[in-house]
Image (cartoon, rainbow, N blue to C red):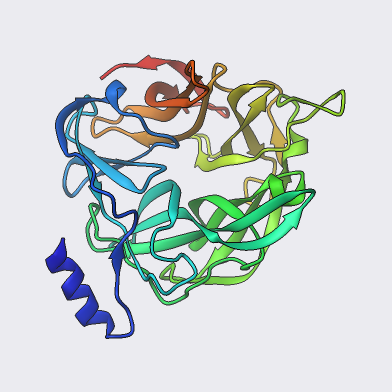
Length: 332
């Protein structure tokens, strides 16, 4: 990795010194069962050129597998410019890997806790934003591109994902509820090489549009304010849908919405009931190399110390109709 860093320093010039994000040493393991991995917001890229699965998520690490059952890792793959707004050691949330036009792209949420951008209803808002890195290989290294900022610096954004509509690339992301009290899912156009954004973001829907999420606020039962983990998909019949996650009281839960127009602009019609059982959330879809459609999602529980325990799990899915159907848990 030191050799790769030196090469990148040479290629990008003396003004950029890339460092590995989150520098603490990570133990390396082989033949790790999927249910032994602790990982929030899992995302799996089924990479055909290497015939391997690459799993990432919150924490900025990558695991590799040939069969989805046993995994090798974790690997550090993110290299950042410590002189950017991210600082030298940002938190990394909800990372995703996308292959597009011959390159691999790393969508993630970066947080610099040393920078405060706002105070809203007593909440101090840290510098948190979605950003995209690029690599020639699925296992990195992933490095910055042209634009240092993709979204407004005074806006707290998270959980970016990727979608292409009519040959135009978009970033789909959330504006955090702590800053607006009613989280949103939004879109913004990306440059053709994904090196920056074009124009302004547009709200697709708000957390309050959900008929299934709930919380108790000031003695009243109201829709939950959280929007997490959007993931856009299209069924085999052409129906455009979006997975996203919120809460039903203290249960982390995933729902789904469908676009009436068949485009990102919607309007988005929310399903009345969640798509997954309680205490599962932040899911995405991928196809195995033998064509099976799976959802990877994390389970959500709390131990006796009040710490969240999140484990990546697989569900077998059916997208043959107009609506996505969860069939059963899948154990590779």
